Image 1: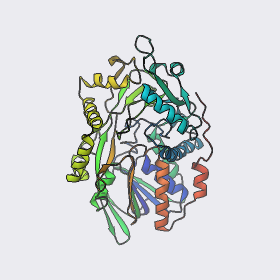
Image 2: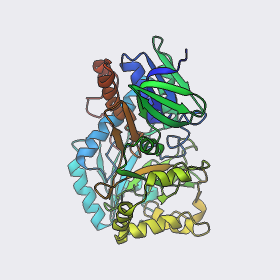
Image 3: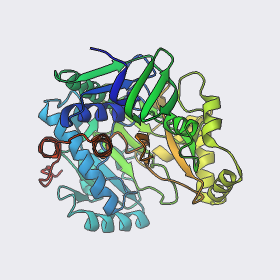
Image 4: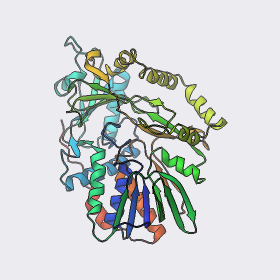
Length: 454
């Protein structure tokens, strides 16, 4: 059954929007929900498996996470895992691989040893590995092309038997499929409906798309970089600008690594360090990346959105000062320049190998190729009020019946956790009931992780 007025309209059919669609249908007393998607299928942009590293970020091997952030991310990551296991999606949506974070060189080795001691209580399955142990479980990180051990001191923190990988497009599909099975609610989805305008008239939101017009009592915008674009059009979030960061990848010609291998991140850099991952969509071949390149558009591999970028950036002296403060740091300046060179034909592979060999010393030009069509855009938020680049996710809850979410990494991992935050706000605003007991029983894992050590 379809209609034009709904309790809630969700704009954006990525994994964040799909997760909210599912939670509203499953755990609340809402009678009607609608999802509007710009393109002809779900998760066609950043939630697509080719646009991200397919990683469940639970904080155990992400060295840029504090213990506090790791605890929060772990809780929401476990929601995705519990959801998938309860529906029997093992090896279809969610996958298990071994995973490691490497410390290379004296300084990083000391850092990783201290980190292990700090984090082992939160993640009891983690184990610290010596060079000899790494040679057994992940030999490619130890031996060079001549079969000799790398000279640097090296340790790893890792685990086996944990779920590490998700096809977030497939996950999005399951959220929608399971919601559409609910019989006593109106659950509509409209594809090829790009939202052009949102207006609030009285207490009702009017949403104009390229195909039709819809109304709702509450609206949630989960539209990636376009969330801030739509917020600005309504006069919200004007203290924020959007800096779209594109990530590219290099694909191995075979399975080079046995599992996920991460490195220590430079704390000055707001982007993840290079890592290697088994690509579940390409026979488990190892994919290296991502790079980080600022692109003047809000969507990668799609026409247009250049003007949307300039409108959302809201370039002024404050934005220029943020850029100046970032680029005056030599580490950040060199990082940006190097990542730009990673996109330049003929020299890109040679330069990329210099970084990738920190993970795989034996890696050669013949082993990898630039992964055409892979990568997405992450909307990094510029906080003009505090004159800094915000790290991670951002949300604008207006308190007036509309929410705008910007969810770069780990947004896909946190999709169910972010959704329940919005569910609670929606229920409070509309006077709906949220079945928290059922939600906790089905999605919240209060038990200690039962991972098998390597």
